[in-house]
Amino acid sequence: MALIADFARAAGCARIAAARKPLVPKIVAIYPGTFDPVTNGHLDLIERASKLFDRLIVALLRNPDKDALFSLSERTEMLRESVRHLKNVRVESFDGLLVEYARRKGARVILRGIRAVSDYEYELQMAMMNRQLQPELETVFMLPAEAYSYLSSRLVKEVARLGGSVKGLVPPAVERRIRAKVS
Ligand code: PNS
Image (cartoon, rainbow, N blue to C red; front, side, top):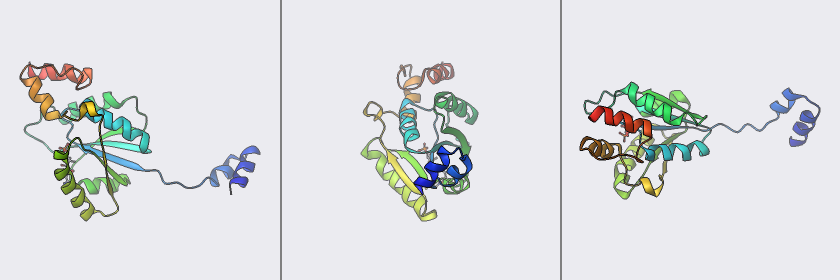
């Protein structure tokens, strides 16, 4: 098989060479979340995952959350700006069941970040429920860099609201937007 493909390629028969390429399915992963707002911890995970999967969809939950600091379109904009350099990463939004959205997108993986043991219980529950709903879909857990292991959107908002600096915890554009919101 490889010989035929090599020969076809050498002879310039692009169509034959392409037809003989082994069919390796592309792995699409979905990284779902609220991202209110995106932090450097999220971005660290997105960069790591973009090297592992063929395509990564960062999926914002469209659920109207009364406590959200940023609207869905603001959260989407901030994420899009932050991942612009990653060519295989897209930012979308979804509502309803995550497993249904994953099915529509042809995704085989749900990606979630685990920072500390305290995250594990909630993540395990979600992963098991999603497996119950859609056994073909795998949840993959990844660890962010140690420097971000204490970081969460909730704490970033709290610190900013109380006048503390969030420099280095979120991208500079996000930092500016938070300051504008809370001042
Ligand atoms: O960033 P978050 O708030 O921890 O993300 C939670 C999220 C969006 C992954 C979760 O709430 C979710 O998947 N919601 C979609 C609705 C759904 O499928 N619920 C059943 C999951 S077990």
